[in-house]
Image 1 (cartoon, one colour):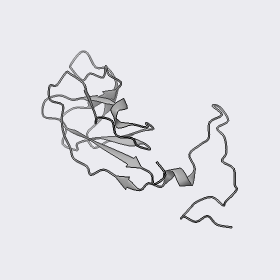
Image 2: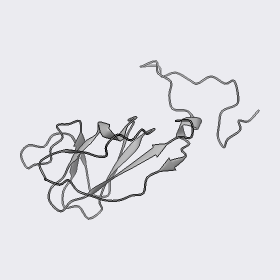
Image 3: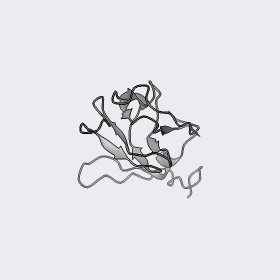
Length: 129
């Protein structure tokens, strides 16, 4: 018997567990979302000083997207992500690239970029959140 939503597993079915970690793997239902943000590119106020991508918004996951015209990569990570030349720390996001992050709040990621470069955050919420 099919679920009530598109691609939802049948009622009463169990979710498979990750063989390595033992956690429930993402199911079809968790892939659905009720809303996502507009893509509005922005840069940090002071290059070399990481900023929160966005303050305190609960989500079901997010993407950091590098603007397609960026001259360099944007750095993402926890509070110490830095893009400054010679001091790079974090995960690089290249021009036009989108990095998915399985986070529950937008305030958990910090971003830094060089002057003139931009990035966007796209986050997803779920009807049951």
